[in-house]
Length: 63
Image 1 (cartoon, rainbow, N blue to C red):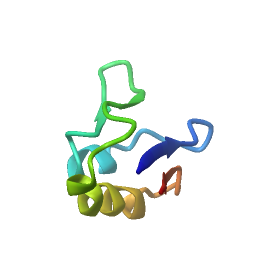
Image 2: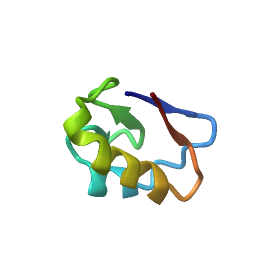
Image 3: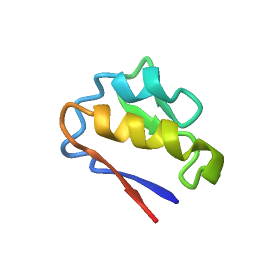
Image 4: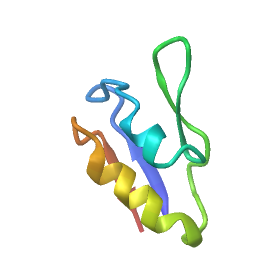
């Protein structure tokens, strides 16, 4: 599984980071960072929930 973020669409609201803080982080500079681009399968549920929670639909999960 691979996490892909469309940074042009991302508003860095932090919803994804609240849902899945091991993978997503909004830092003090106001930008979203993906901490693990290819998270283990055991994290799929949380990653998918984070992607589905994104208000701008900027997160997609491949694989």
